[in-house]
Figure 1 (tube, rainbow over the protein chains, first blue to last red):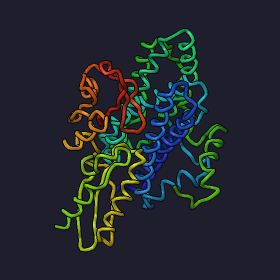
Figure 2: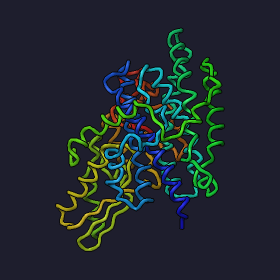
Figure 3: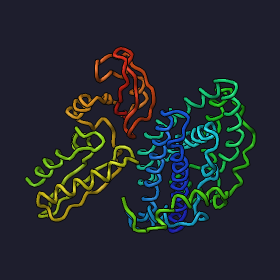
Figure 4: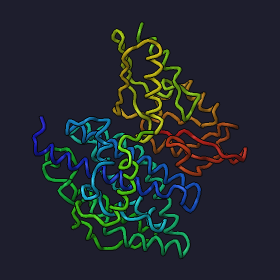
Length: 256
Length: 158
């Protein structure tokens, strides 16, 4: 029997995990019809679908823990929540901007997922372990794709390199927020449910720095995102959430 | 056997994204049970975000209701996670006939499976190259055959 404190912590962890995937998935979907190459248009649409699918998995686990309905609760979280109640990292809500920024952000997130899910697959909380095993196989393709692009652009022309470096300078400090906050607290780590944020951050930043240096990109020393709490957002999230919920707000009963 | 009748019906339900292969051949059906007028089917998604899942789930329920089961429960499970190794031999042949290079059986060694040459479904040449890990559906990647000089799709190993 899980103690209440651990249950509450796990709920926060699952919500943050789902929100990260949902918000990045929504941003990815905005490339549909706008990416610089047809192949990448298709790739970002696929990435969007995958991330939103992963969000649904985390939200369903949350529904189970809160004894809510598995089919309707995830939709309620997505379509009937105020922007201020989302717990995604701010890096993921920033507008797509330059394609280099979108690609680099996706790469940093994919690597985070690879490192995190690998450890989460050993979670003492069985549903978490099962979800991690399912998701990590799909993330494998994400990481393969985005790391190939980061390398290609980093080592490409003077312009592609410059734009990747600008993207890295902006995204890198914020990426550390992924490892912050009460969303990963000691109760969960001691229970063997989730890996420690400190361990993940070290594994992630070492692997990322090693790869990015091979792409001739200079890794900033700034890790200030670590200090941003997950209930703090930019005004960009309001715009995103407004658009995402616009149909549901007009017609809450709308269906396909 | 009532369960046997359910399996027979499921063999007629196809994946809408690959309308030549049944949900059984795709390895999506994890279990079937019949209790009087109640049918229970347990299925698993391929990729988590697959939009075809609900379409197949609804079609399974409809077909079984048409066949006389009054109550149909199509449950989802994600554990153990679906792997392309579960696609049956007949399913693989049908994928090839549909122009989709079937995935090799990899027993969990995804990296090794991706390092191996991908045969062209049209001319069987191994002289092919990856164009994009993402294609028109979540489960497909785009390749190009250097021998018959045409693009083709591959069902991704998972």
